[in-house]
Length: 395
Image 1 (tube, rainbow, N blue to C red):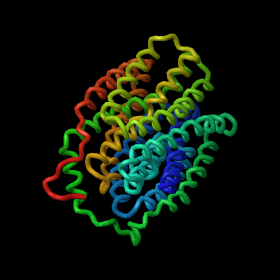
Image 2 (image 1 turned 180 degrees about the vertical axis):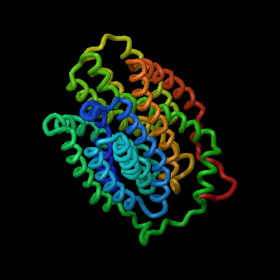
Image 3 (image 1 turned 135 degrees about the horizontal axis):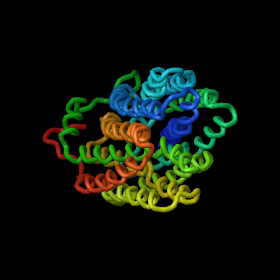
């Protein structure tokens, strides 16, 4: 279990750390190429949507043939996508590299695949805790990598910084190799009593699964809008780029504590109540942030609070899926839930760019984020977490 946690956590730290800082490239890239913010936002939106769609199939492959093959292939694709992003001279090339290639790569190096390994190798008594540890590691990557990325951009240039990140993601190759599972020896999955089609039909026909997907949509909308557009929002309001870098770093730092705490609480409390609290707290935090005068300290406090709530939805959501359906198809089912998250991410990041270019302000998207937070809190309350009762025996 220790090896699984250490290697899985390290891969999440690198992969999530890199993508958390993409908002720092918005202004350098658009100013260098003479593009609108919507152009960059659309590429990131495609990245999130691709990540969500590909996550389902990455999960299927990981459940069938073992996760380490998926991780190693995705790490190589991630490096190629970052290099392509550095060389993009047209919006189409930017969308293909930053959007499609990196989106595909993230599907194989983040939560759905890593949580599948954890679910198969950690007992149910410690599963939510273990998922919290892994998510906390991803949060540490965000805290550590954002200042590094800001430093690389300011001292070496935005293109050269992407080359450095391309090299760093290749560290996932040896880590992925160490995540080989004996039960997948010879490229064959363990025997299951439930087929992929049966598992998908069961999940999509179960109301609680759909409610978890709905909440995750809101999570994606909020965090990606804030992560990508907040640096520009702050600069538009006269704050220095350093404030934005510190803000994103604070989100990552406090996310460590928030995700770990959510994982621990998920072993003791109803996961649906944890999720409802997180979404409602986000809505309140954003409302207070918009009402108060915008200063560096108000940004830092908001970032710390949002950090506690940032990826804290991940452990209870995935642990609830495992608790309801079991772990035989966990990577795939986590991929379906995450697909909903990424549809929300697409809408959040794209609407941020579109409405800014249309209205000259991010205000409308902030208000939408508040309303969605309240909605997500309400729809998580009816979720039933008890293991599903099947008429026939399934794994």
